[in-house]
Image 1 (spheres, rainbow, N blue to C red):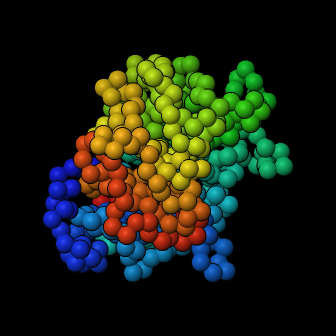
Image 2 (cartoon, rainbow, N blue to C red):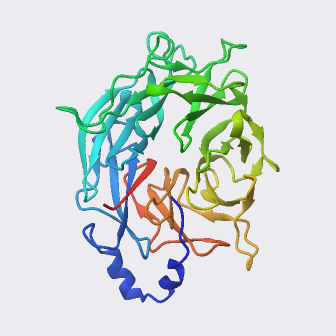
Image 3 (cartoon, helix red, strand yellow):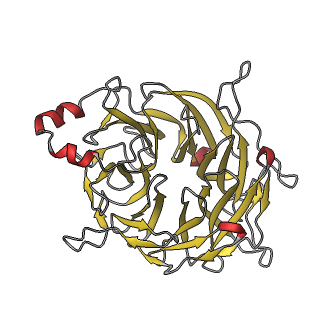
Length: 408
């Protein structure tokens, strides 16, 4: 999801009146680039169930407008994570308090149509990722009755096959979780310290789909780790040699580059991004790592088409922008004319971040305490980010996650 730079010059020639008109174009218009899905943990009114706001994005101005039917029920309480299928036909929403994953079919107009609800193996799912024919979900705790909030233990990773349409099965339906070592989940623990409680915080699947990485926080020792797994036929997991690896004090999110050569982990406790080389089976810190970020970085995204990385800083209400060098090293993406250090203001407490998949020109953050979505565009190859028209955009209360698909 990243950014083309040929549109910035065009935007300077567009009048204010035409920008307003562009912002009002419906999903059927040619200027709709993407549909952006933002989960909110609290719906308006007395209903305690979560909702999904659906925005259409104007490809010229970046203006975000909720489609007429938005918001849609999330199908459960406290939705905290979401992901789209590789073919952009399905949205999967994770409802933390109900231990469920709800599958929605995405209409050509961005509307959501609930199809199936799947229970996760463990307790309190908190992150999800999709790659090809597999969906990966992280649970805060392993299954009951082994673990509970009263007797917490380490979290777990589960893999579900994403099924093709067949008979009564809807395309994108989740099959039974893949068996790993006789269990329908993979426990996240330390062999040398089996009593330590590890709380998972983030998940990333390489673009190839062949490896998945999970960040976790050791609540017993106040330390962080990255777990690596090879993804085999049918989604079976095999730990990568040397896994897990130390990763700072409190890793909060993880992302990889398009080539699958570099992994980036935000450290919430230390306000940095830790970069690693993961090519050829190695896990080696990058030159200059760790890289400075803002206070309590909570989410990270790496552009799939250009050399940029963006980090949402929840305590600073900001985005840190970086260029990615040839060796994977990060450098501030600032404005050389003003000497800016690559930090840009968002709404209050951004907790999720994403890039539009159609033009790769717009960046979004879901702002939990701001109850809104911030949108930016990249003006040129040297930065900086600038707010899109009328940003931030109101959402339902406490937005938690963000995902997007190109307009069909």
